[in-house]
Length: 199
Image (cartoon, rainbow, N blue to C red; front, side, top):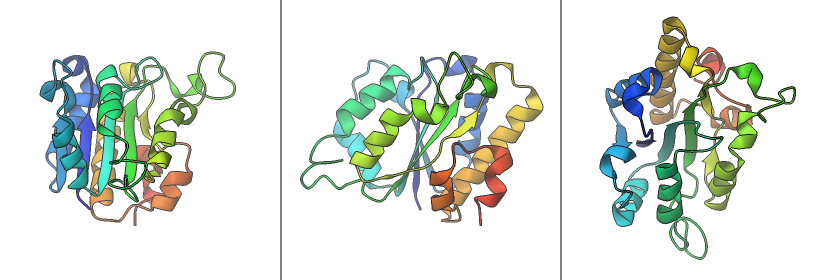
């Protein structure tokens, strides 16, 4: 299925992992990349163009670093403007119905910082509930997020494994080889967990 990656990183020049993921995704045929901060440096989002992009693709991917427990601000602005009533939800708003929605994110904190035993952070899947609720309202299929925890301190081997996993994940999504039901049911996706998700 034609896959659209919406990349949002306000300082991607300083991000080794997200930049490597973006470069890798650009080399995959059948995957369209949109760098939102490059397209909209003044936050003047072309809503009609973005809605056309969504209609022209069967799967949607948000790639971003977790910023203050949420998306970067431009990606939130994009959601507020593009996912309009009558287009994405509401009466006759079925443009996105049935499409998979995947978040590919990085976190600064390590994995053990997130979860029921953490005093600082809830599980990442819980932090993404506003996105999941939005997907549900739009009748989309919200997949578990693909996450690299502790990206700031990740060694080269782990970052490379994550980027290679991202390539596999995007190719599987494009080629309808990703087990969507299993992907939805997981807490999160990681490179080491993809073998059981990809046919």
